[in-house]
Length: 219
Length: 332
Image (cartoon, each protein chain N blue to C red):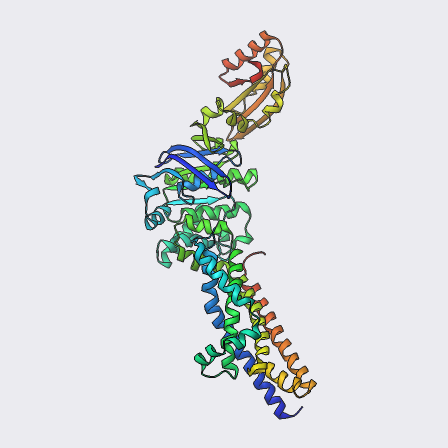
């Protein structure tokens, strides 16, 4: 493999990391509030509201049931509006966030469900406001589980980002498709896949290590 | 201190309505330890949740001091709750906070500065004897230790009332006794009014002054613990006091009496002297006694001889010794 190829791969890794990390971050900025609202508006939640709960649920399920590749194409006008272009790794962030945010919201909701109802009741009995319950009880108590959810979301987003290579996105996925698929350079495709696996593996291991450190449940 | 007036709480599911609490009125005095006892499903946990409005009663009024909580706004209710601590069967500590930070939680809500929070939390840790575990997380503690932390947390904001919802039901008998002793000490030291929910008579017996016996959402009888224990009027109270009495009394033709010990000296061999002096053979059908600080508490179920006059002799001897007893139902 020549030097030029290695430079290409290095750029691909950088772009993939950039897309994945930024998309995950923005997806969480949107997904956490969405997941929290969905959780607290449940019929047994601390702020029940059938309308809001159902509304968010339908929105989340709607976006989640559209295949990513279709979503990618469907929101091209939105992407152009926000980024100004539809090509490259920055442009890919828009569809990635759109696909990941509802997914993240569901992850967050399920993490919050792990917090015992008794603990929430105890917090209420001490005179906590709803906001205090969210900030001081729900989110901190669910933190390890939220982190695990974050790792799973990140791997999913990484996979999506590779798919975006088909429609002009950047990163390792684009290299695999352009060289490996269109030019039949199977070795390049193989190398990019290895790198993708290594990236997922690295985040998974680092994440689990972190979770074990911060989780105070269990011995 | 706490006045419940005609509290009714209904839960409605799809096609049926369940009345968990049915027109209950209770008046709990300042500084007392009040017990609410009943079997599972009697509605006692729902009732205690109506005191701090974790459950909003369907109808009826709750007064905390002079304040009517059932008509209070959200903000007022939150402030009132800070004056009412609560502990639970499952402890409900924050798993991701250590002992010290758990106790700090209600102080954070009350807006107390970090320095004062830690100072107050440390005082409480000392009060509940948990000094060595200050930095431990709940998962590293035993049930009894968790409940001590929960008590410290509930007391952090100097509440006037402490609500205990089956607080000892997940603990072994020895730990139960220690926790009850701690509650009693807190009641005596700070004059905190304590409300204890339990399904165990021995819990109520050990610390409560007055008790309400609940069954199917309603209060069947209420009064001084001693009075209820010695002369239970309701069927529920009888069954709570001596769970196996039904079986024992069901044998046809048997005549049994229940002897209650309410703090006689445990050094006095009551039963032995009864048998020896009367010369009558008596059979113990069941006994449940505890020695608390050299005094006997509990009861004994005794099968009486068939002859009427021997029965009278035994009863007279008991009366002479000032020992309370109650005759079995089928003997009447």
